[in-house]
Amino acid sequence: MSKKVSIIMGIYNCEATIPQAIESILSQTYINWQLIMCDDCSTDNTHQIAKEYRDKYPEKILLIQNDKNLGLASSLNHCLKYVEGEYVARMDADDISMPNRLEKQVNFLENHLDCDLIGTGLIPFDDKGDRSPRIGIENPSKFTLLTNSPFSHATIMVRRKVYDALGGYTILKRTIRAEDLDLWFRFYEAGFSGNVLQEGLYKVREDLNCFKRRKMIYRIHEMQIRLLGYKLLKFPLRYYPMALRPIIIGLIPSHFIYAYKSTIK
Image 1 (cartoon, rainbow, N blue to C red):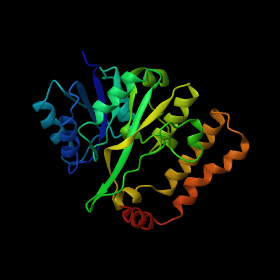
Image 2 (image 1 turned 120 degrees about the vertical axis):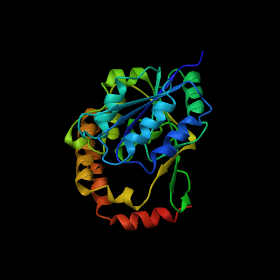
Image 3 (image 1 turned 180 degrees about the vertical axis):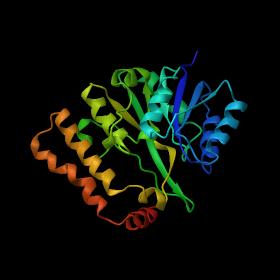
Image 4 (image 1 turned 90 degrees about the vertical axis):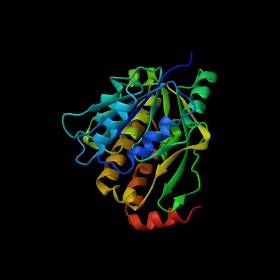
């Protein structure tokens, strides 16, 4: 019998995009899955839309809700309490999973028992259409963290034991919008390893609003996480100045970054 995949998704004020995200899961070629959505106290019609899907597919979809707005990391930790599957996958409410995403990730984990996490390449898109895929490093290591993220958070599928061992996501002010980066440092410190499938199996929405949300305060928090992570992984001091990278990028106006990325086809 195929192993169950529990998909965890935090949802908040995403009424315009959540139907497409859920439909992409319903269209998966791998059918043994459970979708857990945690509503972070949305103020639009998000909860009602999610409830309609839950009511239509009660054996496949679980809808839970936070008591107050807590942020993505808390929402994902809430989801983790209801996980039934041996594998746990991520999904964001404004993105799209390609139909064979789960099938290919499960097959990889089944055939590579030494791998704890499998990510995929990304296909950025906006109202103008799809852009060129961003694939990433096939076999990232802890040293990938010196300058980049080894995995695209929303694409990952992990063995459940990983979240159990790491205790889920860290809930701190500095991990707001950087909960994944903190997770990667702890992931490698715990001795886990991961890979990235070399094809775009996940479509990520990247419009101008996406770049505008990356405020300088979040980039400062990212720098703090990197410095602490470098120490955790015992990187030599000569690498520490590389933690300034998010600050330097943050000095570039968001509309310039968006305009540049929009030209990449």
